[in-house]
Length: 510
RNA sequence: CGGGGAGUGGCGCAGUCUGGUAGCGCACCCGGCUGGGGGCCGGGCGGUCGCAGGUUCAAAUCCUGUCUCCCCGACCA
Image (cartoon, rainbow, N blue to C red; front, side, top):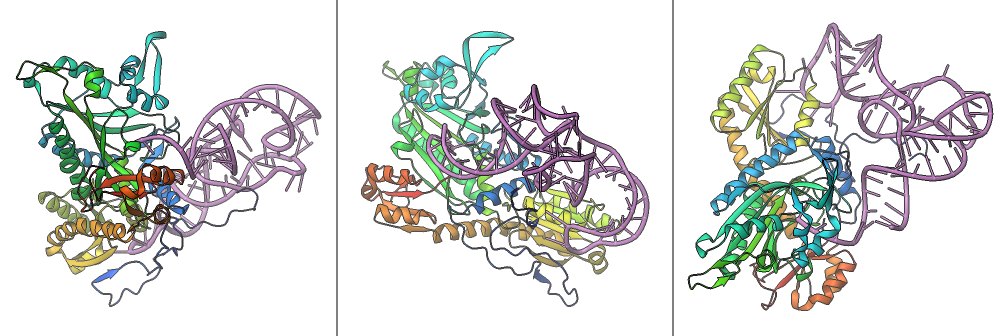
């Protein structure tokens, strides 16, 4: 940086390779089509591979320019800014509703956990010990027993479960906790792996192993996959984690894996079968119908603010974020373009009408800012639709609908404005999903050898028979930075590794 | 821990090699013009140069030490 004299001018656009900055510039305004792309055609960006250094750069640019998050003062911590937090709140709402529909209740457990609790489950402590933050002082005095800042809450929640569960009539017990947790990760990345992150963690206890397993899968399907697919518009692969990737203390971990814009995988949510491991460690027992004492069978499951990272990396384009209207904190931004009473009145009326239709709408009347700045800001944030209302429009009895998904603009009569807006809004989710699915399909290949899997993982996902890969193959790949993301049945179903025909999905991952 | 890079107004940087009045862009404030894609003109506010010590008449700049942050990899929601 300092060696070569003045740095080359960097275009103030999001830096993505091969993209000519598309300064809108002059454009003939006469005889323009009613539906038009509003950017000069630019060459498609080259296919980004996981090895390319540009995607992480692009990601960081989006996070900064769309004002999603800042680094906190302590390494790895994150300030979540309003737009990103608004998105999180939307996701929380959708997740919360589904969790409750699945029969779980919300409760809250403490941030601080006695250090000894972590010790009680051998694999669990081994898995988390390296990344614990530990409080050794309180009130100016050395604590008799250090307190761990929760990295996850299995231990403290199960210590309560042991008090709450006595009879088979107390089962199933299904508790969810919205919280923040701290894991001292080696390399933090905003949203994807921060030292502190927000999440929900569900913890349940059941009378039988089958019931516990069914519930873990129910959460995976009805809560996680549903929110990712139906709300965020992100196709995911539900599957089983390999032994190597299983949660510390669980016997099976299920995952929803998503493919990011550069072909890398991201684990977007997990659901674990804990068997009786924690029940034994915390002496949770119930008396069954026959009067026998038994340990319950348990699950735990969680999704975190990492989902926001996925939202950015799956749908983002050269102009910033794109968000499904089902998840967007604001679905429609009504832009008042001129300091003019008629325009202002029309803008306010449009906002009111949209509110009446149940649309999350925001008025942008910052007429003291240049139009370009305002439009670009909303585009970076990925607001699904902008309605542009200026004097020209009003005089003609029209308004402009700007669609963030394909960056098209359409002039519509004011009388049809709200109906057309809702129509466009309704179609956006599917278009985003289809785009992401098409990319994943294009970048997923079936292979038969470890070498081919390794090569293919440079571009996206590779599927290889688990019987062919095996534990050895998994190790070989891992040394090259390629991991088995999950195991799926040949027909895409959830399967056990022992079943014939099971496929391993391998990829590089975040 | 290994490999790179950086600490200079709020943000991004130049200045360091060759010591000598701390600069630029953006942002911000004021006034005006503009307003359909990151606007224009004019006027302003704002800096103990990461920290500590040393050399020197004089240190952002040279020397020694130290701290922190960022990026790439190993760990992981």
